[in-house]
Length: 382
Image 1 (tube, rainbow, N blue to C red):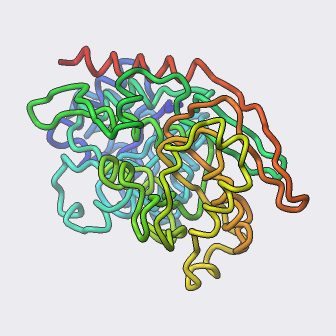
Image 2: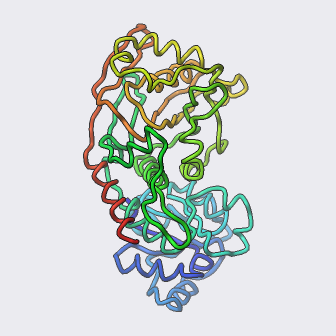
């Protein structure tokens, strides 16, 4: 849950940024400054007064011994504010702000609205949560920024320590149409840009991953049933939002196709649930035989934590195939996250004993209800 918003005290205040921070300060969020410049606390106090922001709750400025980007300033600010670093959103306009958030453990956000010189650097725009308009930051904090546990609608802890999650378990008709038919829906029709259901789902996913403490070293998408293709729904509908998830972490590579389909197989959703439960070994073998990990990537994932994303899961065999291959290649831990879940249990494959176990996952109605409230909130903005 976000409790404090820290900014650079300069560019992020431009073009309506100060007004947005003032709104959040009035709602008792802590507002402060982390600066890479050797400027005094009094300088930023005067700047805050100029924008009617009152006094900053904290000022952490760089000095000859401490430079911005290492996370030291953020941790100092967190200690002063008596909050955890993962309860801070760092709003910046340079790559050093992103590095400071990453290394300090905060949520990085980029003030694209600021239009400062540092934003011309493509690296700055490439990472961090993009804030295109100041008011969008306020809406984010009101919804996803206030997220508390449970973060997922369904979860299952596997015997070997891996985890499988689903963002939602109870699906509205709109979510079901999106997951089953790829039919997106406009939640809010805006003058600048429409807000769609797929965008809200991936905002939700990014927030759930960050607030739950999941910190992968690689993120990959489970491939389509067709040879050489990615999951069409995740790559087409969610591609822009998918990058938002990946941008939150200092990953070795932005997009890595760790799992690739060698040849086309039948769509798994055309099999009935009973067929998949009664013949899990056959279904798993079909997945394993048609999947591969590029040999040039195997060395990279040894001893790493891998996050595998999929659109929805029913019995869990696709995630089991991914887990088996990634562990065989040397991965230390595999976490699977699907947008939707269509059955309460998960079929776990115990590779050592060559057997299947049907595990009962946990449903978390609070997470489903929260997402419905978020949809209602954005709908009410129209």
